[in-house]
Image 1: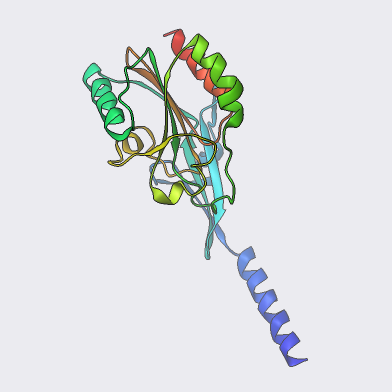
Image 2: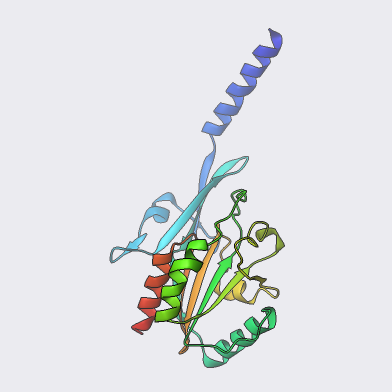
Length: 212
């Protein structure tokens, strides 16, 4: 009986402490925000400009903003350097077309890694056929480090490591679940899309860049 009393007290104390946990809010650069500032201005002209993930640690709840997309333009020297880098980490030497498509995997932190991964069979069989015909990009599958590739070598995709963190530090500086993808046009215009994505989202980015 005594053991059960102790167990109940333990559960009550832990439940009470969980109810007293504070929530802290941060932007993508680690600056602390108020709750009102955090939830304000997520949309601009009906476009979602910021996303967030929410997780719990031993003492608090944490909510962190990160952008939905990042748009920019590379200088020609930067684009040339990126192409040299991609060839240096790839198993083949590429002749580059009008577009670059980079799928970037940065892991699931702060969430646990999944036990299985999407093998992108649908992408290879269907969507890639359309994309190759319409835009014909050079496509790369890049991962951050060895901890992020446990399940990704399945499905016949040639995943390569961002050995010197060039792509991660320049395009994916936010430690968010899953990573995202990047499309770069030959004139240097690029769009990064962060977090999980589907085939239509990739196509939409190509469509947007085509108008630039």
